[in-house]
Structure formats: structure tokens, C-alpha cells
Image 1 (cartoon, rainbow, N blue to C red):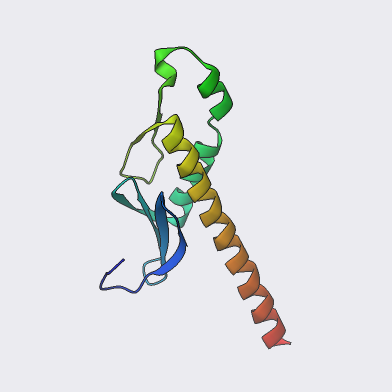
Image 2: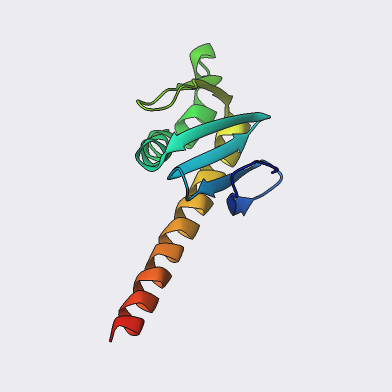
Length: 117
């Protein structure tokens, strides 16, 4: 992604990508052709909201209302309307991004502690 502010790519897949802007302390989620800029707290709320959706129940349900899921969280200016396959890949993308962010944080903490000793 080409921007004036340098972005660190957290994760990229066929479904989309997640970037980190250290300068503005933001997470950028590029999914389904849409770019959403979030504060870290809003990103974590979005991940929790997506994780709380029971994909198995959604797949097993015959109700028309279970064909789509509406996801909106505080701090996010976008409302996601996703189908089951989209939810599956979105959940995977957000999970991988959260894992990479946590790993990076732990590595940074370990290196900082080791250098301070």
C-alpha cells in the first residue's frame, strides 16, 4: 500500500491486509476492497465482535436472517455486512493480525528487557 506515512504490513492474504501506522497509532484494515482506519482499541473491539459470531450456528440455520451478519463497533466508522464465507476469511484475517501484533509486542518487550539489563 502506497501512502505518505510509512505503514508496517502486519499480515496480508488473498482476503485482504492489515497494516500498522506507528506515527498515528492506527491499524488499517483492507478487506473486501474497503480500507478502514481504526485505533488499536477499536480494532480489538472489532475482532471480539467477529469472534463472538457462531459460524457453525449461522451455517446450520435455515432462517433468511442468518444469511448475513451486521457488524458495527464503537470507534469504527464502517458497518460491515458480511456473508458466512466473508465472515470466515475476515475472522481469520483479524486473528492472524492480532497474533502478529501480540508476537511483535512480546518480542519488543523481551528485547527491551534484555538491553536494559
